[in-house]
Length: 128
Image (cartoon, rainbow, N blue to C red; front, side, top):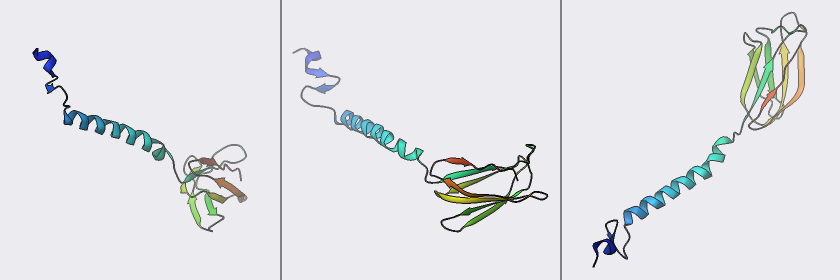
């Protein structure tokens, strides 16, 4: 018998190498796990509300008091705008929010309802 016919890759005819099969199954399982989990990691359950406060001439207003109120739960978050006149409320649960802006020398400005949905960033710019 010819040695090349009897053995193929070191395994006798009719028997398969179990370690090759194991690694093949492991490779396929890892590929499937990566494909199935990729869409789930991209989804977020919260949203973001971004506010920029400017005057009527377009100049940013530093240290304006921004109050964000969840209309469904009644929870409130207060913060002052940064040096760019901006503020971002992150990790908000999807709901409707009221935004109130107060700044020294300006009339208070209020947005009655802004809808924030999951995996979105909503702008609520103001000119008090």
